[in-house]
Image (cartoon, rainbow, N blue to C red; front, side):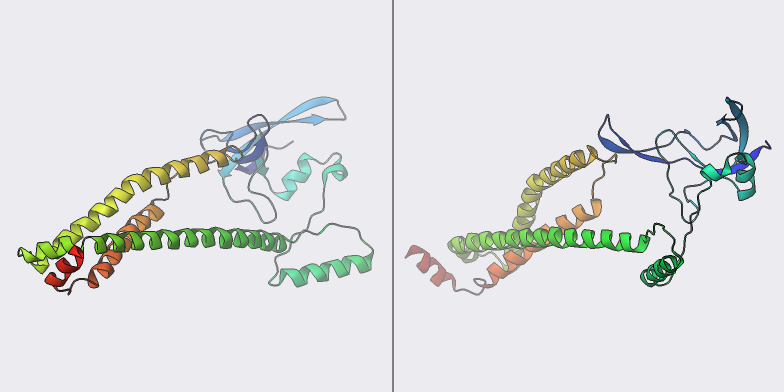
Length: 276
């Protein structure tokens, strides 16, 4: 046989039954290999034959109609049609499968038309509509997302309500304290500065407990997923930053709203009501 030249896809995706998880691996440690030795069984002579294949390039993108991964301990070598037919010229009928792939603007109508044509011709075949499978997958993801985000929004609203109620109650209980501070000469600027420091303190205290707990729960979720799928752990930094800002915004808004109710209250009335 003449020497082959082809393109290698070195990406294996398979289920490891011993580890009980899906794995993504590569056989070649780097992309510097220039050739491969291929062995195949020659049934006529009852012996193994060997051929050298030059590697023209490595790629992660498969041609239309092919997966971009292979199975455990295998790589995909893509060669031109003539080279493939020359290599497997003997017993070609046993391996030469006839697969056709179509790209259509309306895949569902194309599927119906192809089925009708094949039925009229009396042919038995199998049709896989990738667009339909992707649509079903997207529908499942959409349903899961609706329930997940709905639950997150519900928990967030309950948390915000609790923070708002706690701060409002705290401010009402401290009306006499605020009145006494104003009575001894604390200015509005100093009063606002004190409240700002308290808001920052509340936010930091909440984050000191919340962030470690959130990171720990994220790691537990990662560990549970890694039992079935091989993946790497990463922190959702963007989500964490948004959460930090959200905590301070909720605390500041709750404090400002609560203080707006008593800011203009008469000092004497506040002290008298507290004594009553």
